Length: 117
Length: 422
Image 1: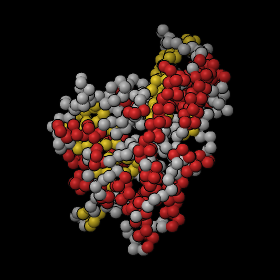
Image 2: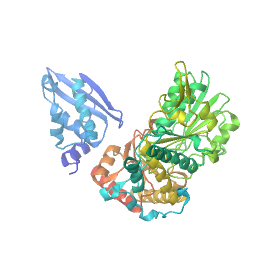
Image 3: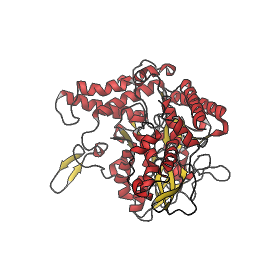
Image 4: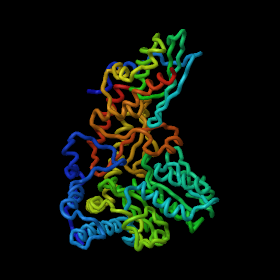
């Protein structure tokens, strides 16, 4: 079965929340030097809740889809809950089994979420 | 000598049957021979012959199977020396791979002759293994590290306005080492090594030239005396031979003058409490038990290539490359951007490209889902990718077992990539 299932193609072609925030309360850039991927994640937190999410940069379809799905997932959630976000959630959102060399792509946005909080 | 006897000729159009991997994976389209080549049956058989028939250590046994192991090991040295036209088998050192061969020079010669104010010259198209050792050596000895650039089409930037090769301003009387690749592992560009060495030695006759032959020796006739190089490094595993074996060719006087690289067993003559006397080259550089099986089997790879003939190997790859460039550009036009020249006459069988805006990992991964093996990334040549402003490329590379159906499969695979993500 191809890993490029509909949900991944959809989110990589039309990434949700793909933007830079004007006044983020926190911002982080993560890299995957192996493939040159770069992701900047901005969030706006109000009263302990993530009220706005935006990200920008370059990545493969898997890492873009992962960023898009995660951005939807963490939006309007409480920071204290997202701080201990398990990486399994990424695989659940993507809905596929990944080979070891693609897990890094999928987890780059997750790494950014943990770091920015 | 049995390698001079006539042997079954190899039909290059019907060659896949000699490679057992294709029986295990009949649908595999293998386009990553620049990373490593597949191995023909005779090489695999020769490697296991050692373990089945004369699995003893070399040089130290007084008994028959040890003598046989030693003779198989040393016979490869002779065959490799003839293959690249070295003056003597004593100029062939066995290492683990090209990287180790190059590091051996950096440690054995570099540490001895490089000091502050000297220059080491490399090019930006080098594989990391012919770049980093020299960068570190220069930094540790306060020498100048000079890097020759490339033109937008991927050729070394060494031509004057009239198009004449000129190393003025690059090579000076302070330049001690010139380290260059023969064929780029990214663009496939074939550098005019003989002309470059002649021009460099004209400016500075004492310069020592170190050539990375990892991508040339497997694919074309390479003659060290014709090139005029002082050192040539290459790997067995890229030329149909086993992994774990590299070759370093060096002019005997230079090898003789160098420090050893690794110290220990096999490489010593006599050891006293206060000092040690080393063996003469090449054994001075082969400390510890070597890859006896691998070295023994390398000669079968050389014999196989010799039966085809290196000019036929080159001719075959040139035709495949020409066909691939025509097919890819015909089908995808501007969407495919090939790094370096799109001219099969001036490059080896290597095509690194970008495909629209599609990420190279996605290209390679979707191709893999179609059983097509290509490489994605910067191919251990980050300085070149940075210089040409491409973070990463997809690379398809060819060898004697690549045929036009493999290229057709690549085109079909890329059409699918385009449909999914383009």
